[in-house]
Image 1 (cartoon, rainbow, N blue to C red):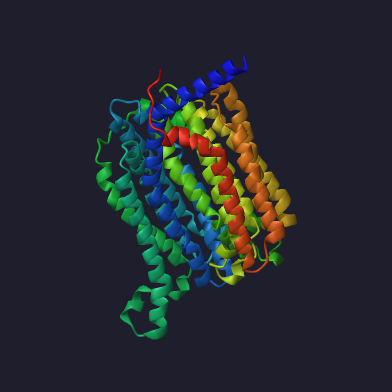
Image 2: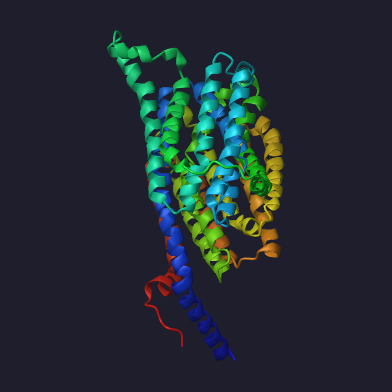
Length: 520
């Protein structure tokens, strides 16, 4: 009996290996290839943008100025989600089914154009009141600049989605690089080059283009110019029949509305802390200064977000196109497994080298280094939650995404209100982590009923707890030992990589390295 059981397991493993090589491996390679192509510009581009944060920390010595930048961009993130109202996912859903995807594109673009135009008109009409509400009463022009920037960004959303659906990652990558490059160029031009000219050649004619009193406004102006250039580059992508199919648009809006709720609640979960922190801290604690310090540390954890974003760009169109294939769930399970492994590698790597990374920013912004590991783990669970979200998207049960988002938002807001007055920005970091852990647990629990996928939970928890244990051992025992702490950090990362190799080498060997065998 034992021999037969072993023979049965061996046969199942062989069949799975053959299936994976001929079907699953092809799908994984396609996803990983597109993730790499989308990911290179996304990761490299966002990494270049990431350098703007330490750059700003050296330009704006006053942490309150950095706090204002972070505060404005937190509001902008909310508004962007509201102005796109889930239409990107709605476009994916219907453009992949309709015989004429151009009708889907044009209907969605017309809808976005008129709602965005209305938004800009409202902002310009009340810009003085709005600027006063976010402690920028002396600079209402900042609000106007960001409103127009948001309008440009909204209008480029669907053209980018179309490129992804058409599997044109090279053009996608080039345009992303153009946008990022222009933004960085004008940041350096306004914040470094012109001040240099002012100090060394105060009579230069170039200074007619520069006003030092504009301050952080040059950060927003650089963003505006970059968004405008990107819109110009995408105009050829918008050459479609501009016809509004109202019945189709109503279906898209109905489908996208829960996604819109998911987006809004997602921004609450990720950015409400940067809005509440200045409101909930006592004025004697210099709230904007604290936000500047916290927001800078928050940015140091963005590398994991880069990986998640690159994965998302390829994964969403992938699972919509693969959802009717045989054994797709096995592919999803493998994707989740290797996504979690890579995510935890990034978590442990950045967490153990946080002190080294924080040396990049100006010294007055390093006090919040301790929040980096918390935010990293929160981002990891955000990635797991996103990967799990396929079950309610492919089954058209997007309302569950809204339920999870609302639940997370309630938890986030409640914990921020309770913890910020007591713990400051550490309370915000803890709130984000608990929010995404809770959302992940609820999403997985319901997926078992509606779209069960055979995820390898044993491996997931083994790697999760191993990485947390190694991090805690380093952080509370070996951190602070001068230059030697980085040697310990490297050792603990090597140990984690070794655990992965020892545990996965047989699967890697059987699935990727052995030659294909025909089934008996």
